[in-house]
Amino acid sequence: MQHAQSLAAGIHNMNHEIGRRNREVYEAQVALPHLLSGHAMFLAMKRAMDDLVSRAPQDHDVLIQIGDLSVTEAQFIEPHTFLFEGVNQDGHRSGIVCHFTQVVVHVIYRPKRNTE
Image (spheres, rainbow, N blue to C red):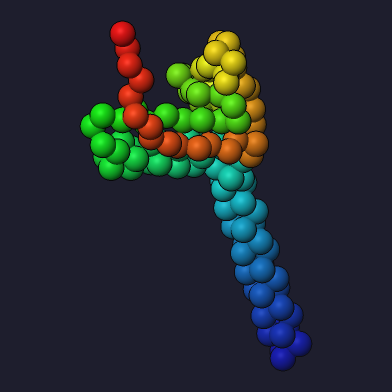
């Protein structure tokens, strides 16, 4: 009788362990797409931009710079790609396409350029 109870307890523990592992696998599968997404990068870039806009003097422009590109348009192509368009240091229209893990964004403010 004791052997049967011990066997039943072992089976119960094994089923519990299998259930725990199945939950862990499921939770990892749910989390993985989020971890491999550029969504957090996009939100961080937006937050940095909004923060600097709120603190910059009114006679200044707030710009996103990536490398030598002054960004005029940024697109997040889900789940992990960014397309940045703008003007490079030589004044030429240019674009950068990159994976979110490659993006290094500089958010700056500078005096507005004379538009005349």
